[in-house]
Image 1 (tube, each protein chain N blue to C red):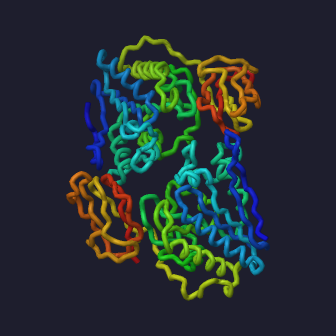
Image 2: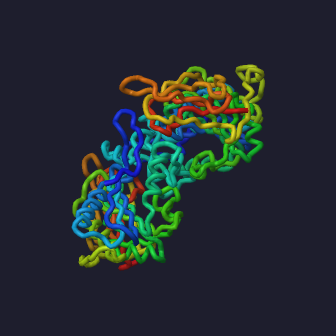
Image 3: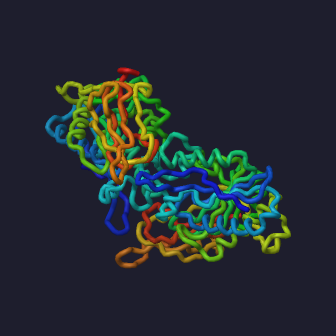
Length: 306
Length: 300
């Protein structure tokens, strides 16, 4: 039987509590961690965590190792559907490795790190960034070959070997060597199909990690998508140069030519076109903005080249 | 008044970054307030200083930026409201980047001065004694002390991120002072006036203006001199002291009670003597949260 335990329980001033829970499936030294809901505006990740947990519960006696599922690390933010931990208005994904005697979000970060330490593989589940639709993707450290190879089996369109930015050291994924971040869909929404794709990808990863027998997969391995691998140099951010309303003209993962139209920025009061936003390169659309209000400089799309 | 940067805003005209300049030549001082749109004690202090500088032309250049985050201030929000980005975590900025990155780049360029000051309020849930946060030694410590603010807090430089304005100024080789006073969301007129006097003393120290106000420093401390009192448990905190109060060891700082029913959970008493530097203002508190800081060496 799956064991559900409280990793940490945040006491609220009014007397209520907000627990961060872990559901443990199987047993054995090899331990895989699946964590979702570090931010409260990524319900897709939470959905995938629950889908995976349902599968693990059904097949627990066949597991060849331990799988710890943390379905929601930031329960108060998820409660509101906002990115940050409420009241402190703090991004939990900028607080790792946390602090045992810090304010509540820092305590949660510390408790998660302590609880997860020693796991063989950490998989973080997110949704798309706010205001965007994104193709399914696995993000790994640019210099970690093994995780990039493993991520090839995650049923995503793209494996992005990404160099850490200035904020990376304080993120959840950065705390665990070789971690894989899976994301896609629409910011703060559930997207039909994406949840199933990412859940299948997580199950397939567990097959390749030797924890789930292949025979138990609810799909044939040949159905798993083969991703392209890209580095930061292959991911092109496209920005609006005018303020207004961005009207996308392209769909996620569609092909675009160099100079092809990604959308247009229109005057919010008259609807007249202010700018036609073009792709600087030929490639696939990895992300496109779906919240229309933009300033000059707002990113409206990411285009990847192979 | 000069508009040093502007950017198209979809539904409301343009965002404009305003600068007031007094005097000319060296030395050059830049004073920034309102990077966070819900911290306006600095804006009030800078405007008080502007009134003084209109009456007394400085022997050098003083650039004042009373309110950087105008859009945030319109909504009482700390960050830039459009994408919820913190301008003070966007330095050195990027003239071709997002709106906040462009604002950050423009502000960094427009504050090319020998001495730079960034004025903030405390967070909305705490009230801070007007203070200058400075490195442990060097020219900035000298300048910070010259402000004569109630608290001089010597801190390790590593605590200030390079993505903040103070860190960006230091990376650019400018002397940078970080001033904090009062509480976010509210206007503390007394603390604003105290900060304005401190800014004027700084200009006096640099020879830009005449100044006659005596220093108001109550404590000049480093990390080891600051007693931090945290909540032993969650509850409703009732303070019994105000910032600036002198306390002795054992002084009652406040107490925690149950939010519903009011049963007293515990008392908070000073472990050392000194000056109350920080007091929690929003009463609903989580365990381990900061309630009171006492700055001083008495009884340590």
